[in-house]
Image (cartoon, rainbow, N blue to C red; front, side, top):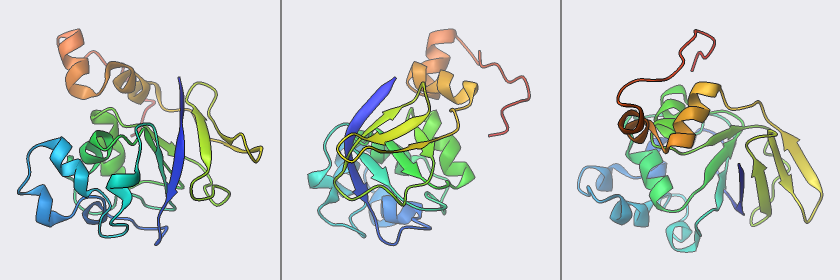
Length: 175
């Protein structure tokens, strides 16, 4: 599967926590994800929710999604139209929560990606590229269990589709 969209970089680049993704002042008051999506990343960039287009990417540094373990953060990003988050690393619980809601996470070097740059993410080949500059980076393939969740649209759609937990947990996927 190939994803394409514009890069949205954030400063600080590292340790963007779930309260930056969706502030606590909203996540306990708003249940509607489309309404919550209007507030994503606003403490870092108040214009982000208005500027992000379906298919766009968030680009960050290390430890993206640290902090709270609530799924509102990845759910709100997905509802805002973010097709994937590209970062050097992710907080472990955010990683799993994102795949549970069907939001792909790409771990690779992000220093070369410029704000506003058009990107193509090829989940099959494990490559992020910027066609206009010719720059690219490889990433480790998404673990098969996580790819299954993405293919099915997340954990709940997966369970509905297969009537239970039909994931191959053969012990090789440690996430």
